[in-house]
Amino acid sequence: MNNFGIDLWSNNNFIIENGLLKLNYKSKPSLLSLVKELRIQNYKGPLLFRFPHLIEKQITRLYNTYNAAIKENDYHGNFNAVFPLKVNQFPSFVHPLIEAGEKFNYGLEAGSKAELIIAMTYNKKAPITVNGFKDKEMIHLGFIAKQMGHNITLIIEGLNELETIVEVEKETKLPCPNIGLRVRLFNSGSGAWAKSGGIDSKFGLSSTEILEAYEVLEKNNLYDCLTMIHFHIGSSMNTIKPLKNALKESGHIYAELKNLGAKNLSSINIGGGLGVEYSQYKRTINYSLQEFASDVVFTLKNIAKQKNVEEPNIFTESGRFISASSAVLIAPVLELFSAEYEAGHLRLKDLNPPLIEELNELFQDMKKKNALEYMHDSIDHLESLLKLFDLGYIDLEDRSNAEILTNLIIKKAISFLEIDDYDELKRIDNKIQEKYLLNFSIFQSLPDFWGINQEFPIMPITHLDKNPTRSAAIWDITCDSDGEMEFNPKKPLYLHDVNLDEEEYFIGFFQVGAYQDVLGMKHNLFSHPTEVNVTFEGEDVKLEQIVESQKIIDILDDIDYDINEIKSILNSKVNKDIYLILEKYLNDNSYLKTTWS
Ligand SMILES: *Cc1c(COP(=O)(O)O)cnc(C)c1O
Image (cartoon, rainbow, N blue to C red; front, side):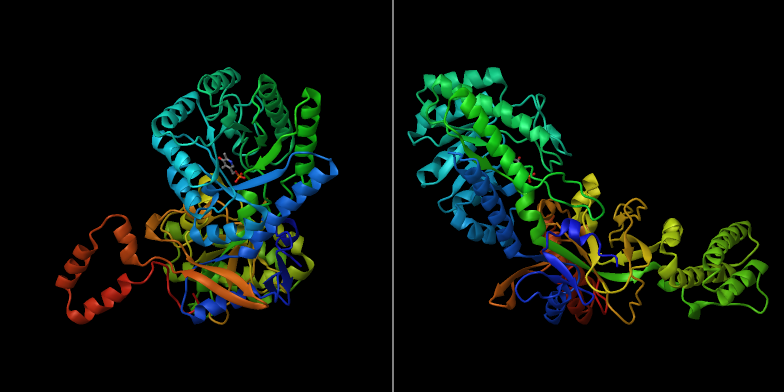
């Protein structure tokens, strides 16, 4: 049975039971039951489920694995981690994250002033690190956070930032936050974002600048504030090797600075980049968290020994690893493209063109043993008939009959072949694919699919006791031809042949908890899906913090229309009863409404 690669990507977070996809936690609710519960409350359209227990699971895995590696290697530094807010800043994610991380002292990383405000407001005692380009105001915010009692480290990206720190310290006389140096490494990363590291990277100090930075700190009597060396070689590393090289390089920089006299320098921050398995076809992340953590600890231990300095504390800033698995998007299927090709729609004439008569015979006479041959013939016939139409030799009714008959033949052949000749079927996937129209926007909910061709695991949440037989392409409801996930024979997606008049069919998109929320865009003015946090009280499921998809009027307000003007113009042009209906529509979201969706 096709299990949609769940063993590869789901990390046991989900299981298939009795044909349903279920959460592998507590009372193991099916995803369908969660969808149904929201529908009862009249939330329709696409739904984004967040699972705080999966955030907690990842934080716990991260700490436990590193702490085990530290113990095993008799390492003397400790382990710390912060969550990089740029990966997901939404309150319904951040609040559970902070709660789950409290017992580990799990902190936050900020890369902009707005993110720093979130960290200053909601972080409790855990560390805060600040990356990214900073102006005087942002550095001042860092000083204020320090004064509020936060354990905050400003990681400088360039010498000018250090000079601004000196300036702010002199002007405000506030105690100086910890200072970290982001180093520009010769060894760059792997994966799609390798340009975050490397000698020509956008970020970090060259070795000359590191020496100069140390002199500036010394001259201003701030070198006690230098506590951290930082690097980040890029997101989604698929092998460990580049990390090892970066560790060696930064480890030696740490040791050199220690030996120069940086007595409070105590930490190496290795950034993020821990990979997440997005593929449902073959493994793409070629290491385990255990190997990763062991390599970090082992490499740093060796350098400290070689240079005779104390073993540094380890900081990580992995974001994708913590958040990706915690959110799942579920979109209802609105339509199957071939649904319009049903036998009832045939308009056969008393006298049909010969090729149509032949198609009809192929359909009537098809047996298991000739199914494949007949299907090929029918596709050829359809192509010929479409040419005849273009030349004016057959009429629109004939063309419609040809399309319907060919689709009926394909469907019948698939039902014959799915058992014995599944492989043969797969060879002609491309020609017989089905288009599934889903009530969602790829631009809003899977922006990385659109922008950087990021894969996401995709699977239906029901029908999992039946083999899916249709090679599937997915269409969203935007009016943009990029809002499509084409069928890819190298990574084939098969879905079920369903009759939407009789049953509902929902498709889940997984690993969408990292980066997708905030990158999502309102193309065609579709806003975010309705969002909900799924928590448990004992065994009972609770649906909390429901954030409904934005109303049309609010979307228009967001892009700076004068909504009073919109209302008054509409009101002036229709009668009162119609205006009341318009008002209702303005207060709905943009997603489509049908019986099922
Ligand atoms: C983006 C970023 C991260 C997070 O990277 P992930 O691949 O999501 O783990 C960590 N640190 C810095 C400095 C970043 O810019």
